[in-house]
Length: 228
Image 1 (cartoon, rainbow, N blue to C red):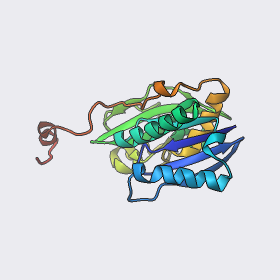
Image 2 (tube, rainbow, N blue to C red):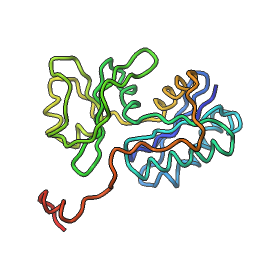
Image 3 (tube, rainbow, N blue to C red):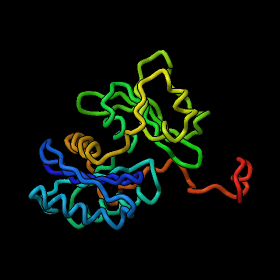
Image 4 (cartoon, rainbow, N blue to C red):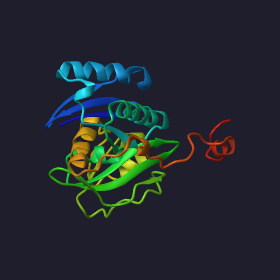
């Protein structure tokens, strides 16, 4: 089974090829847009693996939450390839991939949503898959509801580095700020989903948005001490 996975929900863009449990990965060059670099990177990855587009069984992508433009890039490219190849699509949550990347049993995934907010969710990681324990949410670092402090959680994600207040609130747990969504985890979770028969018609695939706007109004910026 071969699955091509794309993850561009943050500035750190990656792609991965799953080949019967073996995973080969590549990262987008920094400082350039994912829309410019992702397809050439995929072509290079397939060539290195001795594979081809025709050999793929499915296309997977990080569906978010995350950067609006990045989510559309991964989704659009995966859909386009899936339509051309007549293959199913497997959307995988970005926070779920962070939980799998972390490797802990109980994981609190915290992704910087910009605009002074955080995407967050809690997960339980098993031997092969990730279980969502609480609803995905968008909140400020101060208002974010955290799991019970007396339980052993692993807090991960760049929101810990972006918001010192949030890091302080998680001080009782092990914290890994460097964990980000990665295509290798998209590939792994997509392979489990495909084995369960969860592949989608490409027309049904869509990014997961938790926010309906990408910038504050002038009034909102001023109300928070910002400048016009």
